[in-house]
Length: 180
Image (cartoon, rainbow, N blue to C red; front, top):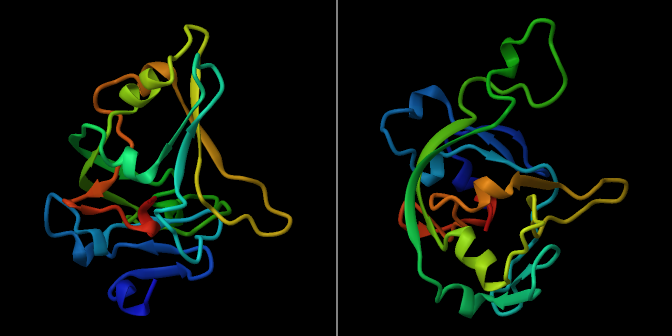
């Protein structure tokens, strides 16, 4: 990201882009994208080419599926307002001190997210009744010696109407630093 995008933010890492919103910027219910905290556990890709991007659904499905960017963007969308908070928010106050980013209180924000419901995409692939979790792997660049950063949610959460594959944040296209 250009340096200007970090104006006013607390920068913990440029390499593994990690930015905290100072409390002085907390002045509205919906957190503006440029004030919303950023947490990357691995390296962001230098560029994302939408013509080469694809979403693959594999595992406990009847019809493994790969959707290209154009087709993905044609899916019906929903919108939710949600709060995101890093699990380490306020870590600077922990006693005794623990490792990790020394977040103050600004690793949290509210945003309006829009995108296809995850359940609808899973249904396209024919979710099997044996499915228990949905695991996510992004476009992160894995440096030598590091491991992939994969997280999962229970299938019950994946099938909720409010669980989205976000394409927009506050009515703008989702930025790479916020999870494109």
